[in-house]
Amino acid sequence: MLITGPRGTKDILPDVSGNWQYIEKTVRDICSLYGYKEIRTPIFEHTELFLRGIGETTDIVSKEMYTFTDRGERSLTLRPENTAAVVRAFLEHKLYAESLLSKMFYIGPMFRYDRPQAGRYRQFHQFGVEALGSKGPAIDAEVIILAVQLLERLGLTDLNLYVNSVGCPECRPVYREKLQDYLREKTTDLCTDCQSRFDRNPMRILDCKKTKCTEESAGAPHIVDCLCDDCSTHFEQLKSLLSAAGIHYVLNPRLVRGLDYYTKTAFEIQYAPLGSQSAVCGGGRYDGLVAECGGQATPSIGFAIGIERILLALEKQGLLPDASNEIDVFVAPIGKEVQGIAFKLLCDLRKNGVTADMDFMDRNIKGQMKQANKYPARFVAIIGDDEAAQGKVMLKNMQSGVQELVDIHAVQNKIQVEMED
Ligand code: HAM
Image (cartoon, rainbow, N blue to C red; front, side, top):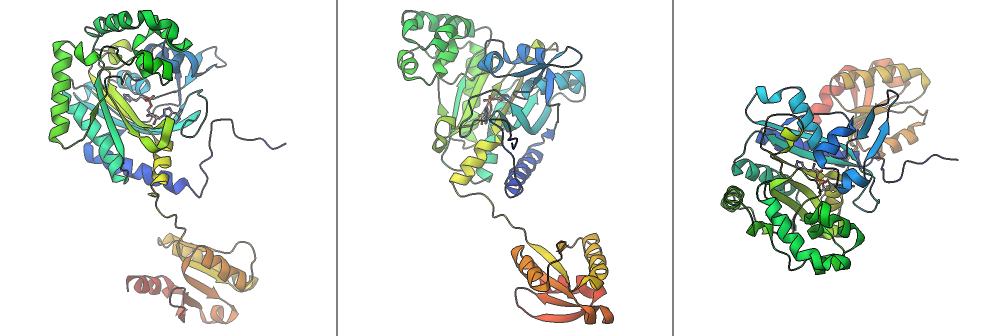
């Protein structure tokens, strides 16, 4: 029996990997524009990192982690997200000593044991940025604008940026109590998940998509009305910075995010046509996480974008680049005797940066011409006995149909001249 890939995973096949490279290149270009450098952390970490970092009551930690014990009896977890690991690396390698502000980005696979559906997978890929060290709202604005600019550069429209502030350890407990007071009488009408959230993590009830929960929490107090002076000023300044930069945003007092480390700014970018998995980007400030992981208090902010969701959105808007397999030259030997000469020409062309290929399947000349058209190849270099005897090739320009006998050492030159015309 054929073994298939695990549920919730996807092979990125050769005909679509160009789309991934296109997104990754756009990501790298934007990050270099904003001064964010790439960090690559391991795919697995000590489980403890995520328990401490993301929070034990979150869905990610309580239900979705791929945790295993290795042969040395250590508990390890495939990373469900990368913020905690970036913080771990920041502390382990003392990146704080190198500069006051560390700006990093990553691209890579994450793992969550989620119920797979369109836009939601068990292995998925994120592009994310993390800026560690600055407490001012300007860095929040920079990070948000970076995300918006990336999505715009890819051509996406119909995006909605939602922002909120989730407060800090000073003002959030006050809000939490107010929220619990509001919901206390309604708990029996909430879904079972939200009933258990009432004590553990009541703010997550605001985020529940179930109709009865959204109805029951509709009139709940808003956290923005309970913020302390510091959080409130920060939020006001962020909003003015975004407005000054011409970034359109929507205030969403129900936006709470699914990870415990957030403080102050929380934001999401949604692409509504994706339906229930419309969040293409999520992020926020996490001023307490570095200290939680054993370092000095370091105000920080970041986001992650789901690459599969971006691909779905690009596909919906018809924005994926045309896949082209075009090559410069297809080398076509006629007969086994000239194979060596043809192969040498192929190697020389490639060595000099010309994209070239040849037949490896013993096709006759008709089959080889068909293959050359399939690529398509701009030129075909045909080598038969006569050409070989003269040290020449018959070079055919596949666009004009014109063919010309050319010295075998002059093939590259000839192609370049014709391509420049
Ligand atoms: P998150 O909201 O859990 O945040 O994930 C960010 C994005 O990853 C989502 O908006 C979505 O596009 C994508 N995503 C999440 N789960 C899946 C899945 N199962 N399948 C496909 N795509 C998915 C974080 O991960 C935070 N670490 C973001 C952050 C960085 N906050 C601060 N810095």
